[in-house]
Length: 487
Length: 127
Ligand SMILES: Cc1cc2nc3c(=O)[nH]c(=O)nc-3n(C[C@H](O)[C@H](O)[C@H](O)COP(=O)(O)OP(=O)(O)OC[C@H]3O[C@@H](n4cnc5c(N)ncnc54)[C@H](O)[C@@H]3O)c2cc1C
Image (cartoon, rainbow over all chains, first blue to last red):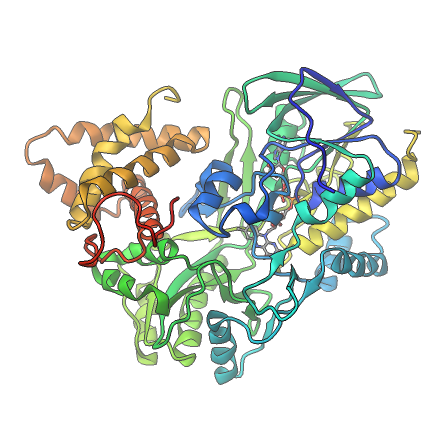
């Protein structure tokens, strides 16, 4: 059952307002509604049925990404990032690669940030439940050729690698490319609706105003231009790691909010093979983890447009390859970064300013990531490797890798990231945490954060499962302490 | 600068850049790619759009100088921090649109002999 979408209105009221309907918001709304709370979800983007848009296409970017996917964290160099902006948030547009919450990393967070009541067994149980709810599974039959490339290259080098399961369902007899992504619009949002949650889309929460101790007024604007307000007792802010701190800052909450953005920066390259490898509407499911958590390798979406983009940094040399785009696929090296960034809401500007600063160690890792990724692909049988940085050399043999190493500079590369975290870290360490151990914003009664912003650091693996596990843990705690009647 | 449409500031340089990079691209397709590019620039986050439009205004002004073709050639290759980023942004958007919409486009922008110039091809993907 899809949620019944409410029409824009000047005024709504609800017991709990959930702002954003991505990995954090959808799970939050679902569990609250199932526990008997009166829930209204406000989502800035539209509801887009999965089958009506080609995955990883420019059309998808227009309809389901913020700013058409063209958003940048300023720095030297700047890092392009993308955010989903639609019902289901990032879960609608992402690659669907599932990593269980990394227990060793979370144990470190618990210690360093003094997160109270963080029970690792409870998180593992939640992960089991999430895996069942979104149907985490490996591909039936053989992986796609572009994925097989990663497996083959890693195996030849003796590097650790594996197929990453995804939240997908496959029809009987289906193969690797017939999966349907079990995003939030197919899982937790219909469940929330079945339990009575209401939803309003194309509705941006501009500001939260606390009125007394038990009431919050959310000022909203609709895509149509209409402005209104939603009154509630509790507001769960789940707008993602960029928009959540921006909204809190617009609402006058700034302490340790938006100061510690953490991401997994990536460099990329395109590799050409003798045979066709490109599956435009899907991504490879293998990842190479020999150097994890510092460095991981995987495959990206490779529409011909994205192949052209990967070649465009040295078009004068690489252009001729585009005619062979069916034999080309795009791959990335991602790092766990020690750098940090800021999200700053500036009065009068609709969108926040985002910055990110890489450390010298990050730069060194990106450089070695580029060279090792090129090596991996040569071992997998690539005839030509086209690194994505200005003036990059074409690589055909192992002995050219030292040239690649010499010529690479992070400042020349097209860096990007799709994993954004840590702008409102949770914990009791008040010298750096924006929220308490369960996401309650310090000194802001009734305003709770429950999305990727809470993770104290980028986890070193695909983050959605960790975001969901924390969100579910926090909302269960909320239900236990507040009860559906709003105690 | 929210009220200034990017087509007037970004469009002319994007047109010269794509014409230089992809001389075989049919003008109708170039126009379509530029429409896409300027639409995207219009939806950029506030500050980024302001930055892009400021640089675009400088580039636009430079285009009226004599020997602007040489200048466009220089700018197309520039690696200067902000100016280079601007060129990279326009190129990225333009190329992504062209090859996603008409995947069989040749490296110089021309089409294989059997393809019709202009408009979206049946085998292509409307973006
Ligand atoms: C292209 C891409 C590929 C990815 N691939 C993977 C992957 O394979 N595996 C993985 O684990 N992770 C992946 N991720 C990351 C994953 O999608 C995110 O970690 C996850 O979605 C974060 O959840 P969230 O709830 O914090 O935010 P989101 O899922 O981004 O949801 C936030 C929602 O809030 C809405 N919103 C924001 N501000 C407001 C406001 N003021 N008012 C109303 N609504 C608002 C937004 O429109 C959005 O829908 C990928 C992300 C992207 C973009």
